[in-house]
Structure formats: structure tokens, C-alpha cells
Amino acid sequence: MSSQVYRSTRSSQPEELSFEDVVMTGLAPDGGLYLPSSIPQLPSNFTETWKDLSFNELAFEILRLYINELEIPSDDLKDLIKRSYATFRSDEVTPIKKLDDNLHILELFHGPTYAFKDVALQFVGNLFEYFLVRCNNKKKEGEPRDIITVVGATSGDTGSAAIYGLRGKKDVSVFILYPTGRISPIQEEQMTTVEDANVHTLSVNGTFDDCQDIVKSIFGDKEFNDKYHVGAVNSINWARILAQQTYYFYSYFQLQKQLGGNSKVRFVVPSGNFGDILAGYYAYKMGLPVDKLIIATNENDILDRFMKSGEYAKQQEVGVKVTYSPAMDILISSNFERLLWYLIRDNVANGNDEKAGEILSGWMKELKENGKFTAPQEVVEKARVVFDSDRVSNEDTIKTIKEVYSNNPEKYIIDPHTAIGVKTSYRFIEKEPKAEYISLSTAHPAKFSEVVNKALESFDGYSFEKDVLPAELKALSTKEKRIKLIDEPSIEKVKQAIKDELKF
Image (cartoon, rainbow, N blue to C red; front, top):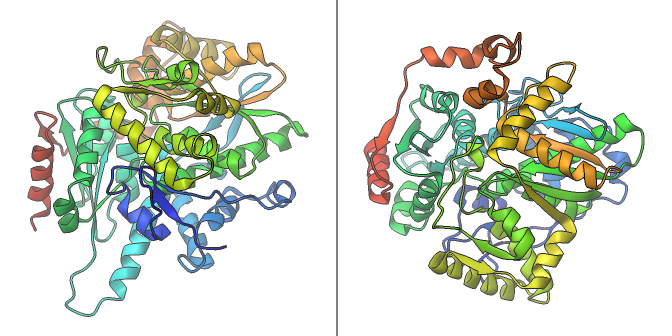
């Protein structure tokens, strides 16, 4: 394949950046997100030649379309994939399970931290180490080693998945910010009980959006970046979106084999930062025959409101609502910017990449200054060709966990984020029953004990410890925690905490 040109969503000029540059940098200097300005197309016979591939084999074929052989030779790429998914508890990595007549659950929680983000972050952690080792092996004796300081914000699952993907990696330090008291106890235990010296957790007295704003500000600090070589693991890092594309293809093929035909397939995705469903958009644009990508939001519903009105608004006067699905408790969906760039280029900027960056930069400036912008009607209509959306309340989240448990002979238990997707799926099945729906299950229910127990404690015979909690997670409560508290959402205090730990 030819070299891919990467660019910032907010730039009027493409940047001559390699895949390695984009992965190791994370966020563009202008605050935009890196993306490939051209999306590779699938081989014309992919439905036949790829349908029986294993998850790892399929991952290789997809990644190879984006990553030049000269950057990562095929044998190395296969080894990176093999090591990344050897940590999963399922041989299929991301198996699907039939829940109802038209509804199938894509289980994305079989990785080391029981969350979908393991699929990407196990791979990203190995990528970081691969690039650093290759670079440092070329250095002469006495030359300073290249390092990377990974700084990320989490609303729950990104942090632990990043930590487990990066723990013990040579020349990598990782700092994860999370909002104090706004993640589940098990999520906090997963992050704070890791003993590796290169792992640091910062509990920030604020919201997830505060944490994310601090991380973006750190990326924008050139002097700090030059010294500490800051890298990203949040879904602003392009490699995460790339790695997540595989399970859209894999589940599509698995479903077609189970049903024995060419069924119309819709994916339903619980969405906060928009990274998970954006991977589905790339799969669709590459040529995977997806009928619809359905955005399922909780009461923090900026994406659903945009799809219905065209207005992208923070609702600052309301603030972030605390819900039963905390990983989706956000005001702004960071990855939505990548989708907007393509929609602008193709429908407003007449296919001009430079003009698209200029227009989007203006929209992002308006969002920062006024808390909102309104997209032209043609952009919203084009988005609706691929996407649809719905909003699920806290009350319906609890009801859905109950319904799935009581209606399923196996007493299947889902977490609250998965419940958002399942409830949305049932609403759409009523409107379009002739399609097959794959609803993404983003986390193991054990990670959200309070909500799951609230839904199921009235059922005779139900026991969280017996029916839900894996022994591995149960053991976390006995381990010592390592946490640094940041008493206010201050970029200076976070930077000082990083400097104190790194001491150079």
C-alpha cells in the first residue's frame, strides 16, 4: 500500500507524518485530532476471503491496509497482534451471543480489565514499546534514550485498560487522571492497585471533562511536551480507533455464519466519547455492508440532540449528569470531531481537505467560546444516512438489566452501559424488525456492582459474588492502593505531580 497522509482535523495543511509519528504524538499541536485523509477500500472479494479468518488474522488484514510494510514489517505486525490478544480469556477475543430473535450481544469484555478498551489498548501498549525499542536500539552508547510519558483521562475503563496495556513497558511512564468519586470502586481498584513503578494514578477533584481538559492543555504545552514527550492513550489516539475496527468485521462475519445468509446488520453502540462507534464508521466507509450505526446515549445526550437538531451544545447550565453509566457521563464527545471533518469535507467543502480543516477549526472555536455550534442541514442529513440515535434514562437502564435477567433462561447479566445499548436496540427493533442488531457490550457487569445489585437484588437466588464477581476482581479489594490526590482541576498541579514522579 502507499504511504498514508495524516492530518489534523483543524489544520488547513496535511502533515507529512508517519503512522509512528501519529501514534506517539496523540494530539495535534493545534488541538485537533489526527486522521487519515483517505480511507482505504476493502478488496472486492473480502466477504469470501475474510469470512473464515480468526480475530488475529482479520486484525492483520485490516491493520495492513492502514500501516505501511516499511513502517511495521508483516512478521512484526503479526507478532504485535498475537501478543496483544493472547491476554484475552476468550479464544474468539470478541465473541457474539444471541440474546433475542433479532438481537445479538458483542461481548467486548474478555480482556485483562474486563472492558472493551482492552481490545485497543493492549495493542497500543505493545505499539508504544515496539517503536521505542526500535528507536533506542539504533542509538549509540551514551546517547539519551527516547521515552514517552503517557497522560490520559478516564471516566472509568480507559484508565485501567491503559495501565494494564502499559504496565512494565520499557521507557514508558503512564499517568491516568480520573474524577474523584465518579468511577466505580472496582474501576478505581483496578487502576490503583497496580504495583509497577511506571504507573501513576491521579484522582482529581472535578469531573471527567475537567480531567480531559487538563490532558488537552498538557498536550498544548510545547515546553512540557518537548521535555517529557507526552503521548496519548485516550481515544484521541488514532491507533485506538484503528484497532477497534476489527471487531465490527469479526462480529459481522460471525453473525452471517450463524444465520446462514446475507442479513441486514445494524450496530448499536453505547456512546460517550464517540470513539467506539467511530471505528464502526471507518469499517462502513471501507466497505463493510452496515445498514445503520445507532448511537445509544444516556442522559448526557449531546450526540442524540445533535442527530435530532443539528445543534452541538454542551448544556453548561445543566453540567454533567451523574448516571448509572458513568463511562458515558460527558459534556463533549471528543471523537465526534473526526466524523465532522469527513462530513464537512464531503458535503460543505466540495471535497477540499484544506477547506474542511479551516471550517472545522471555526466550529471548534465557536464551541469553546459559546458552548455550542449548529451544523448546516446538509451535514446533519448526511450523518443520518449512516447514523441514528436514542437516549436512555437511568430508570430504563435499571429496567433493562432486570428484563434481560428475567427473560433469559441463562439469567444473563449485563452492565449499565450495555443496558443502554440493549434498550436502544429493542426500540429500533420495534421500528425495523427485519434487520439483525448487534449491540456492543462494553464492560463486564462486575465493574458496576452498585447498579447491578440495585436492579437484581429482589430476585430470589441472585448473588453478586456467586453470579457476577470473578475471583480476579474480588481479590483487588485486599490490595494496597497507590493514589495521588489533586484537590482541584488544576493543570499546574497535575504537571507538578508528573514532574515530581519523573524527577528529571
